[in-house]
Length: 631
Image (cartoon, rainbow, N blue to C red; front, side, top):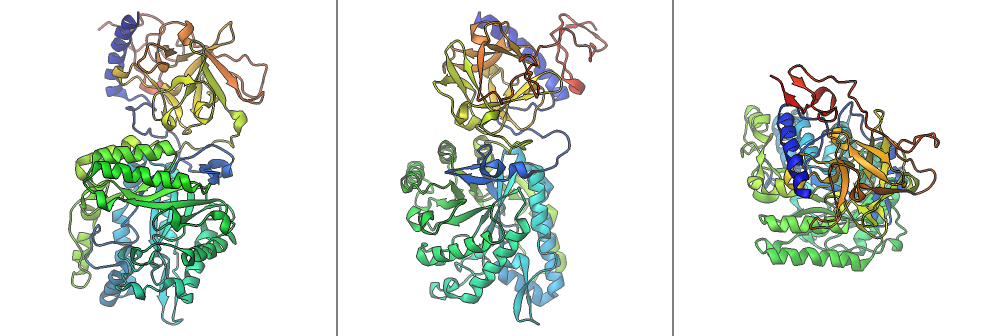
């Protein structure tokens, strides 16, 4: 029986594949890719504002859905590092000084604007969205916001200082991507490293944490930044200070005390945003947050396995060790791996990100793009030209910093990093159209096994009915669509359930993978006489079934021809306030939706005859019709 179903199913799927090649049904894509959000893009709202909730992050100011922040760093955009960027001087400060001395301050800023405009464009935001990213960490330094005013003998906030950061945050917001604002370089340099924007050769000369002027100017900077972004829901968090150990040293109490000053300064103007505290390098290099009374904070670690660059087992053990250490420290705050790479080992990339996903760890790779620096970037720049700011003409600088030079080119490491990241990312965030509580969710139980349906692996795997109780991964929100169908939103990752018809080898699995509701995310919920529901797909009228014959018993597939025991599900609401299928604001409305018996809104196109009423897909403009060919 199952083989006969599969034959018919694959015939229909084959026809559908042909039609998809021509038409591309809205909202349906190959498994593992990120869908395009249809309609007007408005960006995040207050419902999307993030706060910490124990060791997790939730939207709706900490009272809504769990959100996993996973993406990459925009390294090289606002602070250049010569090893990975198109300049050959040792730090950002030297670069700016050379350009200013040769061409004047206005031309220096004009050239830097030219670089930034070409280095990162709207297509780069689209790349991140299509990779499934939910966050981008944006490194910046005080030099991006302040200019030295010789008349005052002091650094002063630049006119329109936030123009570029505002643009970056807004572009991310439109695509459902959060931003972490990362102070990579404080006044005077907190670490003396090139990535702070200012190299200091001797560790004894790195005196930031004993320099009152530099510390006070950095506090002023954070107060200004936090006041500017205080109410912006697209900003996920403030990353207070990148790798603050002197010349890659460790962090201790003198660093923590300044963290506390930054924390109190930010909280004086912004009580709500998450504040990130960085460790150099392990859990013992951060305090228990209770020591300072910190709340709504996230702890950050960087994961670079320098001793195991080509050693897979070493990278695996190193990953397991940091996870075990974090769990044992038990600080009770969310964990964030702000920077990491697994170098050139594909299996290490897959293992590490899978472990991070399993543990609910937030992470951003280093980095989005490099000047062809091997496995460090997801992408390469288009060529490897370098600017010499001490001798190159303005024309040469513009050529080497032009769109055809530093613009995003091919995927680095022959696409290995790209493919690994794309596979691991849970996807961009679904915009919250309302503030959600526990009452908004149902649990789905398969009648055949009496097991709850689970969006396993944070929703990245096929839905499977194999759980004896219902937690966050086993909860779903019902959305009643205007056309009489329903959709389901998974609490595990906020994605919509999708019946995937483009991979016949997987037999139409149901996956919590979609950012928007299209045809594959719509179902008819038919209430049965015994109180159960049958879920019929909108696309081709297959019923969803819990397949107990599957190798992983209970996987949900959309290929049932009729309603039997495998196709029956109990929908258990959290309370009498929970929205059920067919039930919006009126509890008296029957809790059922039924597929129309005719396709009145759409007629069979010229050249076709309709073999049966349900053999073609009511998918609107991009409709794909099944039936007998007549011409």
